[in-house]
Image (cartoon, rainbow, N blue to C red; front, side, top):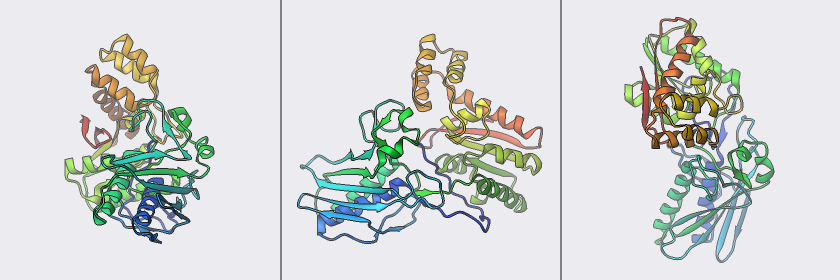
Amino acid sequence: MDAGESEIRVEKPATALRRGWTTGACATAATKAALTALLTGDFPDPVEITLPKGERPAFALAREVIAEDHAMAGIIKDAGDDPDVTHGALVMATVRRLPEGAGIVFRAGAGVGTVTLAGLPVPVGEPAINPVPRGMMSEVVTELCEAHGVAADIEIEIAIENGAELALQTWNPRLGIVGGLSVLGTTGIVHPFSCAAWIHSIHRGIDVARAEGYVHVLGATGSTSEKTAQGFYNLSDAACLDMGDFAGGLLKYLRVHPVERLTIAGGFAKLTKLAQGALDLHSGRSQVDMAWLAEQAGELGGSAELKYRILAANTALEVLEMTRLEGIDLPAAIAVKARAVALETLRGAPVTVDVMVTDRSGKLIAHAE
């Protein structure tokens, strides 16, 4: 249930691909439209929402239904030029009033999966709706209910037309998400996944940083880790390169066009892949090797039983929690090994490297300098 979350800051080439909106953003807009109709009798169309970074896109409604006890709004997902299996899918939100004190409750409608295995950012048995979209929808519901003087006791059911079929083209079945797709997104924005265009923009970012005289640049796998590392070093936006999954594209260009210092920041799973030697960190082209992680835990004093549980783990997040409980500082080892891979890829270029590992909330959990 990961999603691309990086924000390209450098000027894109003239042929830059069109960005789109995440499933989470569409679900939030549909929720706002449906609840507005339930409370007022009218659907706002288009419906405007505020994304985590302050942008305010508006979405046209593709479907609307209102009844005495519920309302539903549907939005066609536009993923821009990203080859996303959910592009063009109808994302629907149905809202209902609940008894006093029930709070905000999420339900998986048709085409939205349910979590059945541990290690994902939502508990087993819950709809596969990631924390950021949940937060966005909860905020919309809370604001609307306050504005209309009613308690925020609301059920939100998210459905995706043909989602069960589309999910077979994703990693969801392997992750134990059954019945449909996940509702994803950290920024609300889908960035088009063109390898050449993305790597080109990384190169241009390095060029700009060098031209501006920056001696320290940051390459992060996503916006959460970027924010942590940028704040840690008080770096300007221009020093932040949109590395995303392309660690190799960043390091190989710096090999020929060096800067004095590079910080690489990312989540535990992405940097585990780098530590394993992968230079393309995208989930479709590299995977976390549980046997390798079990070996690392063993070298740090982990028990045979812990190694066995790591081998059976579903996700890197699950491994991280296992090792934390046993006092094994696996992130520190990952940071050191990821730094070694980065230095090896730089092949002696005069670049000082440090690696920062963050958790999902952005907390720094390891730093190899």
